[in-house]
Length: 236
Image (cartoon, rainbow, N blue to C red; front, side, top):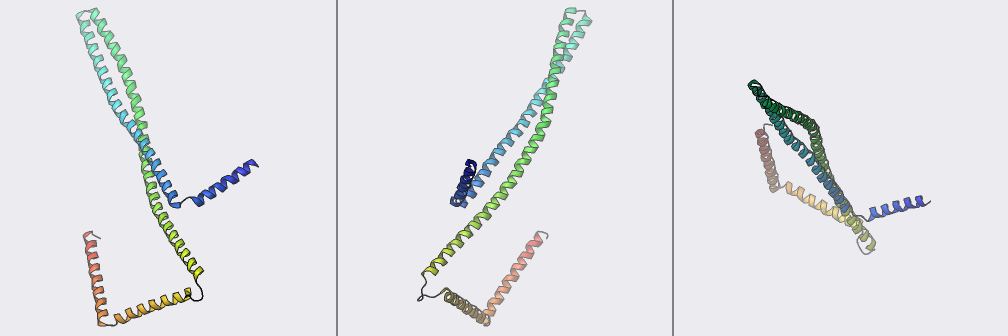
């Protein structure tokens, strides 16, 4: 019973909130929320791309370490060979130890480089995915912006219609027998429209009206010619 009562109250509160909330505010709230999420997505994508860039730098450093350790190991081997040829056993032991130490560093550097390269391959894929997500979200924002314009236009039309409805209801409520009815108002409007159309028809039958029609035809021909020239310039 308590759960049923809670669901009822939640439904009632939602209905009441929907009735109170200004649709224009709701639309703006939805747009603001989408923009906020879009910024968060862009920040996350930037972090992912930055991670890829850092790995590129680490790969370069690790490659330098590999090259240095390899060269040092070679030089130590050569020194040991020179000492061996000279019969200097102490120097042989010394340079052999150095060569072994550099070989150990070389192995560690190569392992480090391989690890960074593996991470880099993953980072490339993640960065590409992040950029695709940003592009897709940007497209959704464009759709939302267009939808916002559409909804605001519909809301404005609804407000205008409500205003007209209120005016009509107010007129209907205050009309009495001494005031013109809506039907008589409509008749007057139709009569004025008919009178205006008749005058226009009479004017067209005069030389001045013919001249105006001719000027309009000339203007349309010039506009058509200009449009054709523009299409020609565009190769259409």
